[in-house]
Image (cartoon, rainbow, N blue to C red):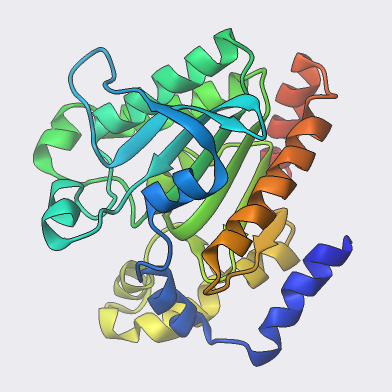
Length: 268
């Protein structure tokens, strides 16, 4: 285990409870545009799925990582109340996932690594979204990700909820911020299904294994990003590690990248 991962785990000596981590994961600790501007340069945003619309909760485009062109896809919960409402608090609609698919396909065509940043309670469950093929859009995003012959790294920086998160996290590596969560559904939903009582969400959080520490110990994620009030320091750490890991992944052949990604998920 590398020294920086060991150092990141030392943070958990004063460990928050899973319920407290869930609460922090829902706070606006890091903003989508701040992450883009803090880690990358020369960002050019691309819009639309070329089919039905442009979901503003999914920001995507081309940027430079230490001079190397990369494709980035970021789920944005929004800033003020009006922005959050327009982006459904980071719950993408089908055209958001289809925009992501378009950008992934473009990245593969031009041999660009893909980096995704995820912060979503889940895909938007609205009537129109379901009518326009929400399930199909998520499933196709997962399927297309499994075929990519370029490196892909996914980073959960807030909530990583259900298939809405997995659609952008079918990657060669998955990282999580220290106070992020990644789970099949919310603790409230888990408690409602298992105990018919959503008020037992804190209890559900304790048994779901949804924290970064839980998932790292189970080898479900590869890295925990230590958080700090010094955001530039966090971004510098991420930039350095992304550069190192992408260089390592670029040593693999296209077929090896695909096989590594598939083996990673089949192991679960």
